[in-house]
Image (cartoon, rainbow, N blue to C red):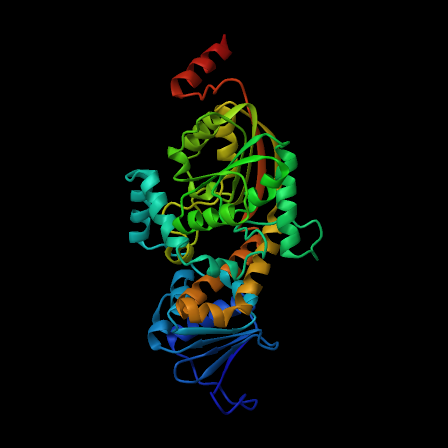
Length: 413
């Protein structure tokens, strides 16, 4: 049920008709009604529209007619919120339950920009720009919501859902260490070192860690960490696609970085060259069932460049074609949901600090990103996995079209 009430008079007595809202407001109310959302919408005029029969779970306050005139799709409403023309009060989780009823509109300019970055620009150039865009807010910004010890910007592993984010991060490292069968004296390449979680865990256990990072802030933080804590290890700044090791590693870990490397063929070729025969690769990531599937809001405000959720079948295929044996694939969707809930709650708790240091707009954009991501994992729109692969003795072969045709003909004989 959807009805309207005046801004200050309360609900109308039975038998009196409610004033008809404008055409745009009526369309919004229809979206809310079909989503069975119990909420209130406050128009710029001050008129309050109510959807549902239960107590409102959230309140959407439109401050401008322009915000109300915009198309009712994810990007338009998200943009209005970031720019302060729309406020969302109450239970933000309930707001995302309406998401499935909104249109997903991707501007043509964004599509062309993405395709140009994917096919016309060198991936190392795109990576450098995109990483600089996202990771240039300073360490304190990310530390305001990530775990307090390792500051992982990828999901932890919860053995019990009542565990803390810090415990989940410890389990993440334990799982990786065991899966790679690491031992003292072994050499490990950490792709995308972040804030040093891998080296802080592995170096005291006698593993020789080479940390590779592209971000300037990350490099400076890691340099201080290694010096101040006297941790043994090598630190390299650069893109993995350009990295050439002096000698192969015994193991490679890549936490939440494959999303920045959508060309799996090139990634697998480089990973194979970085590993000694029998060496293992541990990868974890957020994933989607379709490659390149990402909301227009996220691509505009959060992840620029060619950032893409992991497409599990595609990366498994390329690993097999490049001479890897896939030893393990584990689903961790619920773990990522719990991780992002912790992040979102901590981010909200640090609101005053975030707004004072980085502004209201960035706070609002990341708030949508964190709560929206949590909800996406909850409903299965996103998934998460970790994967373990072992390098074989030879590099393939990766079958091309002619080789496949020849194999097909041979199979007919």
